[in-house]
Image (tube, rainbow, N blue to C red; front, side, top):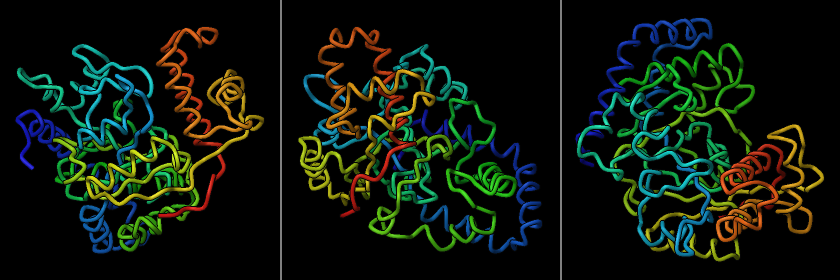
Length: 364
C-alpha cells in the first residue's frame, strides 16, 4: 500500500539506523553460525523463509469499553480497521497518546521525529504488535490481549521491529530491508541462554530448523498446542499504514471465555463480514485460591476474589470488571481511583496469563 510521508520517513529512519550496525550484527551472526555448525546457506534460507511467511499478531482485549456503550469488538465490526492509540485513546493501562505525552515522546525518539512532522495526523501513527515466529497458541505477546489478529505476511514488509519492547529503548531495531540487528540478537540469545521469545530449550540450530520448516503451519494446528504463557519476550512490530480487516487480516484467534457471549457473537460477525478465519485457542482459567500474592503485587488475590465467578477468573470476568469500572468508578473507590484500579485489572490479566490453566479443548 502507499504510505504517507511520515510513515515512509519512519521506515527509512529505522532502516538507516540498522544499517549503521550492520557489520557488528553480521559478525555476531557469523560467530554463532560457526559455533553452532550452521551453514551460511541454511541460515540465509531460514531468514528468507521468515521474511516470506512470518505474520504479525495484533493482540487486543475485545471487550474493553470505549464510549456510548460500545467496546473494541463493536468498533472493529463497525469500522473494519484496527486503529492506534492516537485514534482510539484506549490502553490496557495509562493512555499517553497525545502530543507531548509519553508515547508521543518515545515515538519521536524511536522514529527520528517522523510522526512529529507538521501535518501528521493520529491516523498515520503505527499500530503495535509482535512478530509471530514461535507460533504459540496464545500468540507472541499475550500480555497485550486475550485475542489476536494474524496479518498477511505482506504487512510485515511495511513494518519496523525492535527486539523486545520499544518502550525500553532497545538498541536492536530493524526492517526487513535491514534485519540483521534483530536476527543477531535472536541468534545470540538462543546461543547463550538456550531460550528466546518465551521458547525454552531453543538452540540456534533448533531456531533455524523451526524457521525453515514450521512457519507455514496452519493456524488450526497451532491452536491445538498448550498456551505458552510468555509475558516478556517478543519481537515487537510497529505496523506503518492502515490495517484493514478485509485486506490485511487473515485470521482471528480468540479466547474461548467469550463463546456464547455478546462479545463472542460480535467477533463471529466481524469475521463473517470481513472474511476472516475465526479460531478459538484453549484460553486460561485460574482458581482464586491459586492467585499468588508475590506476583504483580499483594492486592491480586483480593481483586481476583472480587472479579471471580464460582471462585475462578478468566478473560471474560476481567473484562466485565473493566466495563463495570468504566460505568461506575465510584463503586470501586475502596481500591483506588479509576486509573489505579484499571492498572490493577491489567496486572490481574498478567497473573492469569502466567498462572492460568487451559479452559477448553481447542476448536475452529
